[in-house]
Image (cartoon, rainbow, N blue to C red; front, side, top):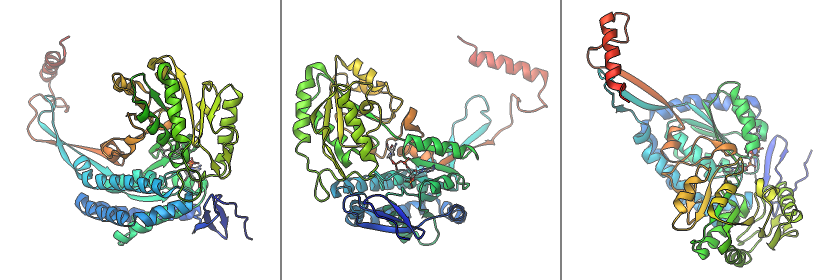
Length: 499
Ligand code: NDP
């Protein structure tokens, strides 16, 4: 039976998952749908591959990962074009995304040995007769579940670090972007042909659920908060540790001493890049009263210049057709509850596109302020001062990133944001800095990818002590005497008893 193809909606036909461009309906690829047994088999095959990969050591893996990095860089146009065809993402956005991912592979490859490799740790006066050793050992096989909105950067943010740490990876790409996911796997196999160290399993959510229950050593999930809860529940059955990178509703704060032109430029990009389909995208802005009108004017002037369309446009189609209803509902709710559209508005949703929309004075209770919109829309609300801006920014259960524009108080404000990350006088930049950890708090998830914390996320700490001398003050033995215990009491008071 032949399924009806609606542009952008993945279908399963004859056991194959078919992905199509959301604007044109052009087919991007078709992939065999994995059964739960296939998923288990993929993980079983990955286990010995992981042992082999771990056995290469940091140097062997570094060399191969840097070769993969080189291949990604040389084929950047090819991959960007595929991302454009499959998800509708404008090619320049795709290029920036791939470049960022390449930087992460490079950093993870070069730094895994330093961060995770065996090293001696200092002992203290207690147990001074022992040396301490620490290393981070791989989990074996890591399962990675990815979303469609950044189909290269988000899986590589987990996969690149998991591989550098010595794990094999079984990857379940989003059903909306299987072709990009398979491309990543195939390109890795070109530089590591010996063993199935990185493989993909395709299908719908049930395939992701099967991966959670497949016996992987750890599960790294990136996607919505609702699915994150299901993933954690499934992993709880076997106590499989999880890393959850979930949704967000990031706020930007514009203080009175901000450079308004720079703030407006960064706000428009941070909110509308990738058609607003960005987990760390700016969705709400709080500008202090004295600069509010000028700031809104500058945002509108920039946002209204953006082009919308399938080819060579600033804003491409909405990748997931079902999201159009969410975006429409948020705009309608903002307007019905007293907000005003100073750009776009009720008629901005013209499937498969959404035209730039700027809403002001939107009640904080509105869905447009409280829920993830995932479209090229911004709410900008006026606040009396930066303290009130922080209070409102922190009022939601989400806590992924955020941005602050200002001078004198910007750092203090950024530190007070209840979020895993923040950028000052720019938007989204923390995602590209490979030395910084990336992740959220609250409904945005927990655990970190990127940076040293991101490497440690994919290794189990292994602690070893080794005796180097006889114990002068025996404590960890039944052969200790009453006099030894008395000396221990005296030592405890001497060392820790001071007030
Ligand atoms: P979803 O949660 O819908 O899907 C994410 C992945 O989980 C997909 O591969 C999906 O498969 C899979 N999945 C679905 N159901 C299950 C299940 N029961 N068990 C296991 N896996 C399952 O998110 P989207 O793909 O729509 O991505 C958008 C969301 O991701 C937004 O909320 C965004 O904020 C967030 N995100 C977070 C990031 C971060 O770093 N914090 C980065 C990027 C996005 P299928 O697609 O086949 O249903």
